[in-house]
Image 1 (spheres, helix red, strand yellow):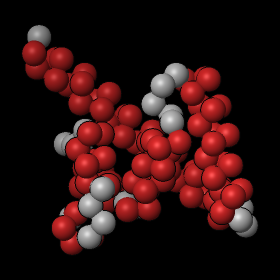
Image 2 (image 1 turned 135 degrees about the vertical axis):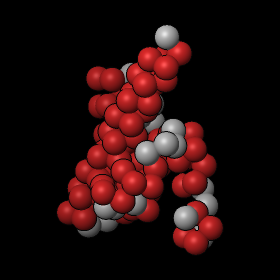
Image 3 (image 1 turned 60 degrees about the horizontal axis):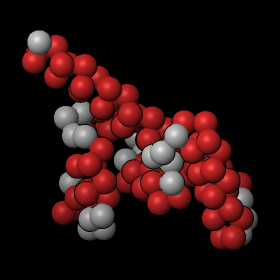
Image 4 (image 1 turned 90 degrees about the vertical axis):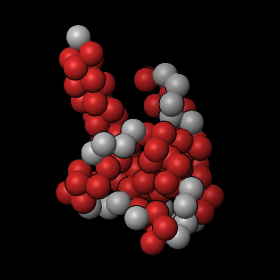
Amino acid sequence: ITAGQNVAYNAANRAMVMTYWNIGKRIVEENRMVQSVQNREALISVLSDELTKEFGEGYSKRNLHYYRRFYLYLPDAEILHTRVQNLNWSHLRALLRVHDENARI
């Protein structure tokens, strides 16, 4: 039972981490088309409201900024899979607070 629970937890964790990475990727791509900083913040705000309405908590503006930074720090999905496959979102969020790339790695 414990082994099965661990497999299920790890699969769900990987799916959520990839979801957050994909949200970050989409934000970065959309931001490239927006000219002003105010419009970029408005994009985050609107997206946060829409995602929260549709999917519930977990899509605050603060979290969307984390998702964006997560994608910017690890833009290659293949590297993402090899580096963070055993880390949960709490671990990754702690790493996102480390601005020195060498220390983060």
